[in-house]
Length: 297
Image (cartoon, rainbow, N blue to C red):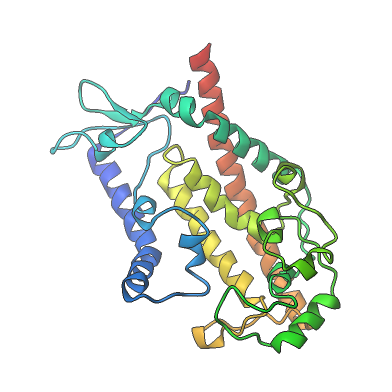
């Protein structure tokens, strides 16, 4: 196993405070909306579809192989958190063996999924039509937001473009009439075999894998994944059939040549950022699995 890095109290407390301030930009407005009983058609997704709570997101974790030295008030608060252990001097670190005993299967799945996804070329021709397929010939919609082109215009866009969604967690929300229009048949069982790095949902899901691996993922990496998820979610909904102008989101009109070009350029930029985060998450998984092998041996 790599030699552990010891962080003095002043360093890890500063990093923890910086992390909390960074994510508070998003968690504080969400908590306030929830207090007022308001919903947000774009940003609520990051706290409802994704199950990490604001309070857990605000917690900073150092990652494996990092030891938190005690401060003037004693051991780091992590000592009371699951999968952490403190030594006799009050230094605290992630107990990798205990973590892998409980979460090893998840680590292996995420490692396999991210590795397989990174091995494929990015397909950037989907134009975000998954959101359109979710309201195709629909009697009811997931968001109480009007459609930019109306129902008939929305249906016409779906019917005049090839639908090629490779992500099961998007495909499963297609309307019954839209299912047969998809050129692919993603399933949960085929997720590792089908996921590709150009997919907006695969890029957003980097945040999901980051927090599902918590507390083994450094807080800075979780926040990086969350920031990209926000950016991609906004693109996803700007390119959707919904009219979100009154919420401050200018549409990406994928039904036009100009909108198609705008979407593809933004999708490629997000995929490039996602590639770096995917690599970092894969390295975390690989390090954990390597440490587990060493411990087991």
